[in-house]
Image (cartoon, rainbow, N blue to C red):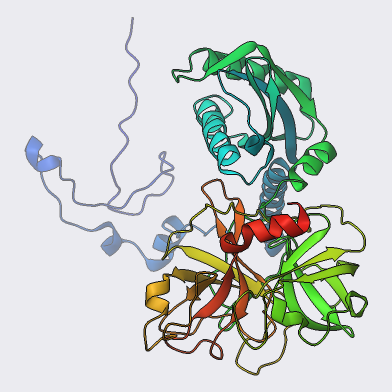
Length: 472
């Protein structure tokens, strides 16, 4: 077969060509391959032999591609639209979720029931809660539901043959459209697998245990009746004198305002749906309950709820201007319904001991500075519990602190309760984030002075007296 010969395409043209068969022209440049092949090197430049017009026609620069303004605007709008869609989807997926509640009843064998297990604030109930809530935490944080599990709460312990029944509320965050029954099956399976392998000495009878789903309203009613639970677990770090305002309702749901002639006079603490605890010195000028009203909520005006006072009981040994026995209980004319914004604090047992130098929180509508104005928004502050020996030093209170008193604050000053905070709570959390009433704002030397921390009525010292007067 005859081989078809292609014409040799010249690397470049040294001179202008007329009627050239080759339609592509390249300028003569130094060919770095030629020296290796031993070819003749021609240093003549293509540009030296062409008129400027021809160079421009054959070597015209490429025109830069540019978009019309409307095209650029369209692209920008498209990017913004896609970003908005992605943002909306993320927001929808994050917010299209709600809390699912389940009630678990677990038969615990070998545990003897006693009356202390009927009180949520008792040591026995607290120990049982710590154990079972830790067990629930470990169970679900090692499962496929670890990102959905939001916590549990032991809410009731009741007697049963050969042991007790522990009722636990379990909380999970699922999509709003999810099937509650499907999730209940998964939760039940995980629980049974875990409890079957539980290595502890306490035996959980799976055959006598059950899990049911409950409505949100039912769960909230159960949890609202629980003492010492806050809407938000975080505590403030500022002060009433040197403190910060509370913006969210339910942060400290047991704090109330005692008012006379529609003016805030003192604070008090809700300890049940009908009883309040406050300071005796708040009533030295007026003990007639008809002159007093109680308001609930974060703001003094407008209040969340108002109740009248039925009874005021001041400690029989209180004598003004002495500071001993500075405690009083008040009975409401009408009971309150617990909500996320109105709840009771936990009362400690008489034998409970709050360690010194731990954090405690004071709240109230007292002045933010000595002789300052009363704020409309509830204030909070974190203080340290101070031992009585330190507080009785000569430069502090020189022996004035009695066993029924408790010091809290900072020796360097700056953070303290102040005028208008009297009767309000000093609270301390336990390991389960349940808050206990450790003290009642009583007295001090002005507000926030160095070596003059706040002095509080010690609640554990008067715990039996509270029970005698209220039955709690």
